[in-house]
Amino acid sequence: MPSLPEPLPHAAATLAVDYRHDPLEAVLADRRLLAVFGFGDQAPATHADPRYLRVNLPVHGGAPFECWRVQDEVRDGRSDDIAWSEDGHLQFGALDVADAGDGDIEQAAEQAYARLQAWLAAGDYPHPLRIWNYLDAITAGEGDEERYRRFCVGRARGIGRVLGPAELPAATAIGHPQATGRLQLYWLAAKTPGSPLENPRQVQAWRYPRQYGPQAPGFARAMLPASAAMPLLVSGTAAVVGHASLHGDSLEAQFEEVLANLGSLVERARAIRPDVPDRPGNGTRLKVYVRDADALPAVDALLRQRLPGVPTLLLHGHVCRRELAVEIDGVHA
Ligand code: 3EB
Picture (cartoon, rainbow, N blue to C red):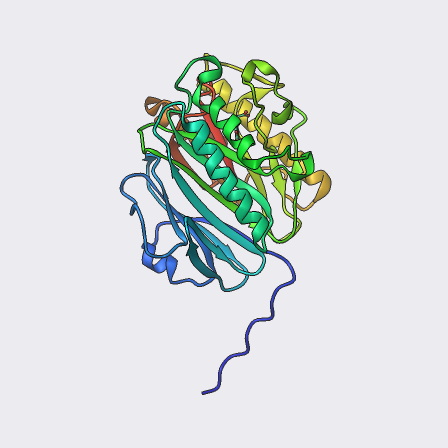
């Protein structure tokens, strides 16, 4: 039987992120799908296909699947505790570990990150471009015992060495409003390193002063991948200017500050890659995490007003400082 020629392997990594309302089985039928995420308790908890992952944050409004499509057909599998898929350029991976919901988050994070480090070091995709962390009760506990701070300690210990600024991944760390008992990690890794970006409006997170905890968080504000066929990968971005949280009394002012931070990051990206659009548009995908469920409709209205036409996914999730009401991450191209 005559067969079509195989597509030539592409020289560069490609990634397209979309929010789709199609049935999960239809999404998974696509062999160029690297990963698909369901949100909230209406989404399937698990699937036999390792490319599916649920993030159980309540979703406001429609609950689409977040889909990552890549250039080439993917292989996938599970290796011990890690679900993975890869297309020769990019790799998706996910793992979760038990988290008793108390101070053991430090140990859970250490265990999870030691596993991730070993995985990256042993594989063909050694460069984590982007990492998401979802944990329970992120701001429970006082002072240095606050769980996010213990998480930062455990993460650093699990990585086992100090990452240089050129090695920092972009990241998100968000709290589940309801306990799940798990620390959940997933990532996008690449064969080729990207360029971590910092935001001139913000102190580098790894330089946060001692008042925010014994271990400064090791992440970059965004990642510009080496391939121009990939979007800018934007870390969780909140109303932090310098190192301080601003506008503790105003959701709307925090929202505006987040937009200013996003704008500043996009400007940094454009200095390196001038074809990156200067404002959020139809090549942007944003996930918006809101601490207080009662504030979801107000944030929904702000999104429609301030970012019309930009695909967004609105989630109920806790930001890692109590005073921060909203955080946004996403991709931009
Ligand atoms: C901030 O600007 C908000 O610890 O991996 C954002 C993104 C935040 C990632 C992380 C934390 C992390 O400090 C918090």
